[in-house]
Length: 82
Image (cartoon, rainbow, N blue to C red; front, side):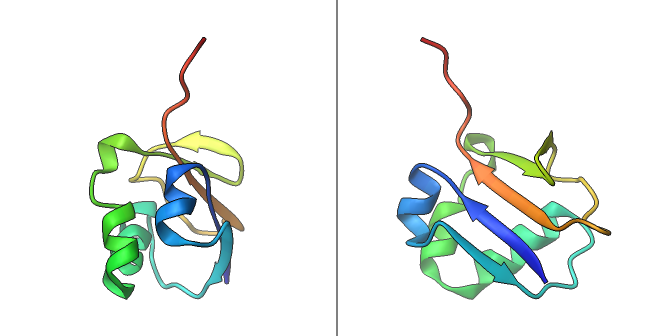
């Protein structure tokens, strides 16, 4: 099981702030594909990966990051300064 967290508009599209996911995904990208296949709200939230950032165990990373041993994956839009 892995904790998956959603922030900002990602959370709004999916409808939950976090969930536990049972996955065999080896990378973040594979996890995203599993989530996309669940239902349309996930497909919409993950339709443009360029509009998303990801962190594994609170470390900012890329979608090709391995998930082995990871406890948490978070998805959020890019940060903007101001």
